[in-house]
Image 1 (cartoon, rainbow, N blue to C red):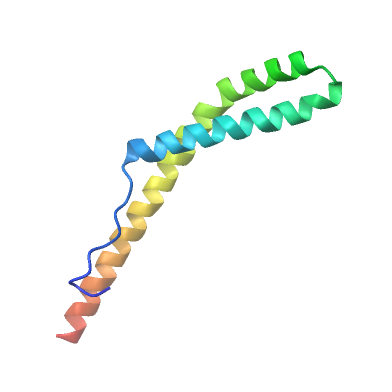
Image 2: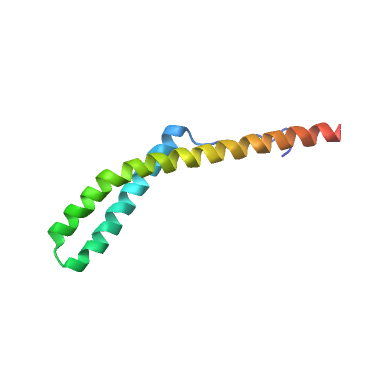
Length: 91
């Protein structure tokens, strides 16, 4: 990366966690609801899906959001180090 080009902005940890929680909660609800539809009861399917989304969604979402944030931070740091080493080699 050229020294005058700024690196892309990385979303904050809170934003990454929020996105992870929302995505995993919705996915858990949809998957659990779809699997419970085999029973043919919409009420019990919705109840089981809501329980799975409530208990599984936020926990997994926090973990996944924090991991994604950490990976992005590590990659940005590695790119910055590579750019510094490349700039030093050219001088």
